[in-house]
Length: 640
Ligand code: GAL
Image 1 (cartoon, rainbow, N blue to C red):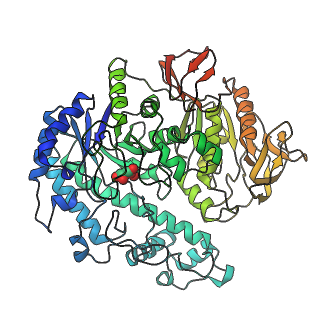
Image 2 (image 1 turned 180 degrees about the horizontal axis):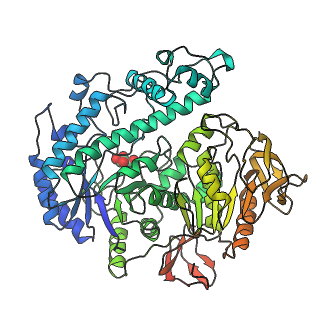
Image 3 (image 1 turned 30 degrees about the vertical axis):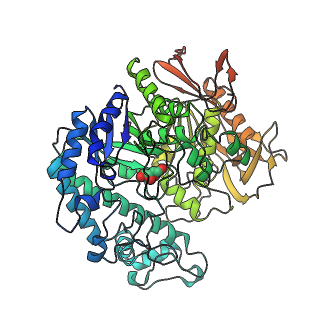
């Protein structure tokens, strides 16, 4: 149990040295204790190949550390300097359209390029040797936002070479690959691994097994890239290593990079995400315009808690308008405080604001910071300060295990997103809808990888888990709580074909999916008793009894209180019924929270957050817009 802390992202190389000291003092006065630096500074650290300029960084560390701040030092590998391209002209990533992407922004490298990989090892070692034991460097960030700007997949010659080797290792013989991929279909058989191309620029869609293997390979390349820097730094430093992940980023398996690191950081831009990255309705986009989606931040907090195996941070917290979404409104007063407290209630060890001072040059000129470009306080500074004061008066927050587990699987996302079968079917969207419903019921949720222990969860949901491993199947079949599978759970083998016997094929659940259909936006299949299926419905047969039926009498949720299969994508009303039924089965208290009100339990407290733009009354509480309430947690009789 530790007291959470606040911090900020800072770019000493953007400012005259004369202001560093004042900046550092102001950060400390504001109650910030962490400062992240260096993650984009390669051209300043090595202006020419092998000519290092560490002096400025030495001075910056000294100034920041002397002010009492703890530094997170970034390896600068997300922004290779221009000279690097003279050395390695083919290191740039190649888009799906086959065109090489260019220098002039960031993340201009292909994960598969061995030359660039050796440069990353070299710079990580140089930094590790110089700063690994530095008294003011308390943590390391490796690279920044893997996969951002669509860079997890690169269709370069290096990727092609790596992919062929990867396939050879996976399948051993070309006939095994032909069988696994089902290449008898459309005469796609290969005679040798050297004939296999990357799955872009085909006449129509490529074989889904080919695409999913390319996704797996690309994910492995990110894991390997990260590991090179981990291996370079580990012998040189005993400080924790972390990466700064993104919201709704499915380009690689974060659980696997997470295993090599100590902490998972992620970037929380609630207003930007609502406008840019979520499939929210137009009315929700308006209602939550200045607050962000009420579930998006919490979802990622819970996901990254799992990725970091319990240790996670918000590495970048939106402080005001951003510059990159289609529209960029300012937060409602109080929201920066609310977002910060919500992260802390979900167990963040630290929340760092992005960034200290707004940059008057470069791509992000309209991105707010805690200070304006002239150094005057921006709106968020006072809110950050307030949280720091509040934190100093509070006992450390003690996390709890949530009663509900929601399984999240990157491989299933690749499988479903390769063959969505309905234009608006996304794996993330399905899992997120389930999460929203759990939150509307006021439940605290743990998001788990398919390998995680499930033992004491009262309720486990595994929607859309297309690739459903035998081990997890057996564990879920025997689980003592309520397990809800489906839709699409177990719908593909690891080779991306339909399994036989037909899915879900789980012991103890006599039900099989006979056929599936997708539905356009205006269409719905009403459920008896309220709610509907939208987007997706499955026709299931078998002896499992129907718990909920469609109005035309087909089973919609079938099975028992221990193990049930959901045969479609429920709308809001449908999900609410299912979650309330499951909670009742388990004797769990389920609320029907007003729109925009959300809760999270820690061991000592129940936190209530108001995302709505008006005062909301609930359960005897009157919570102002952007309000945060915290009251001692009511221990329930059964101790949950
Ligand atoms: C993040 C990134 C930062 C900055 C920020 C702007 O995705 O890590 O470097 O670009 O977005 O919102």
